[in-house]
Length: 351
Figure 1 (cartoon, one colour):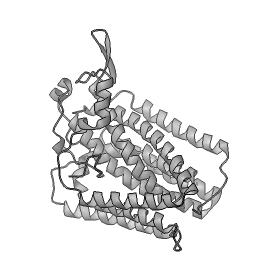
Figure 2: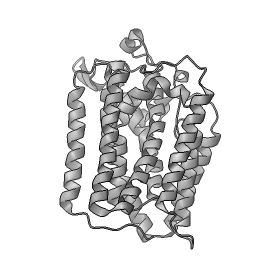
Figure 3: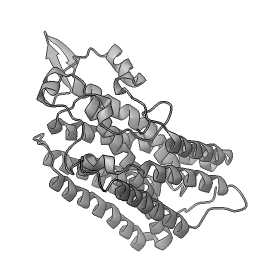
Figure 4: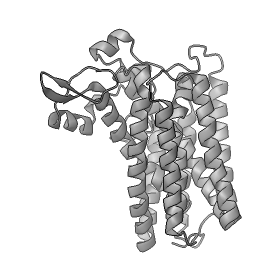
């Protein structure tokens, strides 16, 4: 599979990794007091993350030229679009487990670290497979097309995050107390160390994102198999997930038709990946960027127009989170109060 190839010195990998680590540290320090994040604060942070992601594309432009930079932007844009779908799952999990607003950022912080690790592994494994075995392009491409189809035709149904096989396994292995204990993931009860409901909600998010990572990495590998570009596009898109959640949490129901746009993007990525191993070859990056931009714009615009008379959602509020009583007792809120996300048989479908 022919693709962009340029030398990336070890010090560049180290420098980028340090930048990512520093940004994570800054974000952790800024929210170390577990305060409730409002819409304004989340919007500012979202702007910062997006600006950093876009600025890195300019660094690539100066370093390696327009083709590399535009390829990065195409990957970043599709990853950012798909990351919006993760927000639906965050809302679902937080609603189901009635996670108090003040502790949601802590869960998301560690959830994003897990997401970065999963994606890093999948990137190197997936890119190596595509380089070594041409037929994996057909396999990944078919998977993306099937994923897009499943997303587009998914039906309404009630879901239960606590029935996730990983969550159930953790509960069997680790003693768990079905309640919250402040912002702690673990606590001691009668001298015995146990996991709290906050840790269970973190596991639920990590388990779901593990499957999301397969979709996301496969989609961007359809654009490029250059591991440096795939990793940086993923990393800078995922870093802003926490702030994106608090920005969009109160507006999720307005994105009623976004899943159709994401379904189109996944299917397009699948077709693009398959074509790369045919006489047609890789589709031009400007065409890819155009399809991604138009699809996202149309699906979001369609959603906002269709729900313009819906005054039930207010920006900046997290939907479906439980009140103080629910938080204190550890009682899970009903899952129907929050929208679900990208649909597979093994993860929650979109209502």
